[in-house]
Image (tube, rainbow, N blue to C red):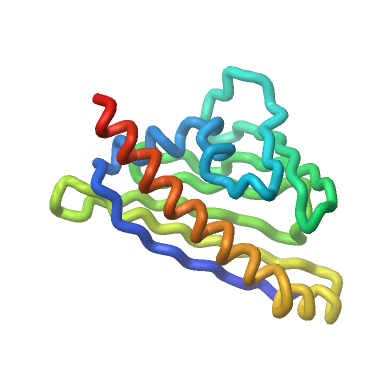
Length: 157
C-alpha cells in the first residue's frame, strides 16, 4: 500500500487558542468543506471533542455517496489534534492539525495528511489522476474559508 502525504501551512491573524477553538467545534467542518461535496455531519449534538470522540459524516465524491467515520486519536489544546478515519473511502487517512504561535500574535497552522487509497495499481492511477488533485482543491477551499470565517468572527467582536 502506497502512503502519500499532503502538507499545508497557513498563517492566520488569530491566536493559536482562537484557531484551535474554531477547529475544536466539529460543526465548523461543514463550513470549510466545498459545497460540491454535500458534506454533512451525522453525529448528534453536542459533539464533545477529546481523544476518543467518534464523528460520522456523509458526503459525495464525484457524485457517489460516501459514509465516513473518524476518531480523534490525540487532543492537545491549543497546540494539536489528530483525526483518523475508521471507516470511509481511504485505506488510510490520518490528519494531524498543528497550531503554533507565529511570534506576532497570530498562528501558523500546519496540516499533515497521511493517506493511502488501496486497490493496487488502480488506486495508484486514481491517485495520479483524481485523488491528489481533489485533495489539493479541498484544502485550497478550506484555506480561503478558514481565513474568511475567522476574519468575520474577529470583526463581529
